[in-house]
Image (cartoon, rainbow, N blue to C red; front, side, top):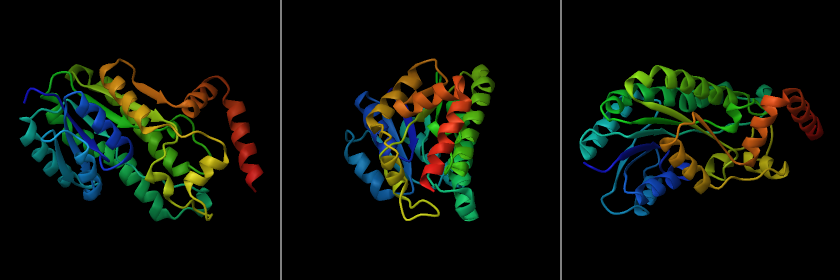
Length: 264
């Protein structure tokens, strides 16, 4: 196949769907992977006919990765220009209120799922000149805020993993990039926060923070794949956090602490 090809986990909604639409509009073949088959069908219906494939899979299972990528390679003739490790879940709340099972799940999907993808896609990426591994990180991978301890741990892990691979994989001709978006208005924010009756979306709204449109993140994904920057910070909140974490870490810690105290 002459067209470039991207494989997107979490392709059934949100960032994955918006990215699939953008790349498909630019002529790419899109592999959609998710545990949500209905969501992927909805995404595929938004893409040009014959320009996508659907793969029901769990990113924590390496055998399911192998089967999905083998099927995808059958559509593309073995071509994989971009693996977009985008699948993830959000769990929030104070650590003291967090169920250890939720902690395990966040690490399994957000971090282990990314590592699994890198392992299993490496042969296809190596066989495709100019390929790229793109990992969804988060503003939580810039500075760990209260109520996001495990989520931030998973995203710091993705950040560190990506930084290491960016160096290791240069001799292989594979670029590694990350996206660090602010809060996105997706179903991920509908989960009830541990220790409260509110959702993560409620917390974002009450704090007066903005939602970054998924279309902005999709455009950042396109720019990351075609650019030279390792980390792409997306959205006002993420940019402000990156600035404060670099130049005013003490002020950032104090502000986060004051906001936490105000809620008590």
